[in-house]
Length: 204
Image (cartoon, rainbow, N blue to C red; front, side):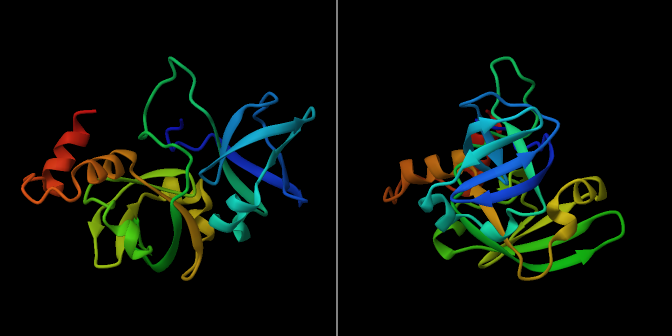
């Protein structure tokens, strides 16, 4: 389990035969779980200043592999008693999003991100979403996309500063939105609305 708060930007040293080797200040142990651009991966090797994770062919089909070069976001798995500041992130990427629009507003930047239609039902106004492992708040839900408004600090300290129109990103929808939707789908008389869902999620 993760929080969506990036620990640091790691440098990609190599990606060969399904093995991704990274250099970072953080030093994990063998078998540790670590989110790399939002995908939960397992440490299979390490040295004094690098560590290696393995990506299965299935993971590579789902993830935006073109972003696994240069620098990547990393976040170690939460430990019991850690401070919780983002939202509950599983590290299970649902789908790829696509950057459709970038608008600089001076003290913030709006990013509009499209996603496959089957996942749009899990995007809630003022709800949470994870983009390449970064916990963010949805400001506006559109027909087949959503808007994020991001402060300069976040842009400058994450991969958001490198994104362009057309960039693919790893997207994980909110866990509670998925669970609640699936609990009540098909129940026409449940009276459940996304306003009520937002209230339920706010209680956690």
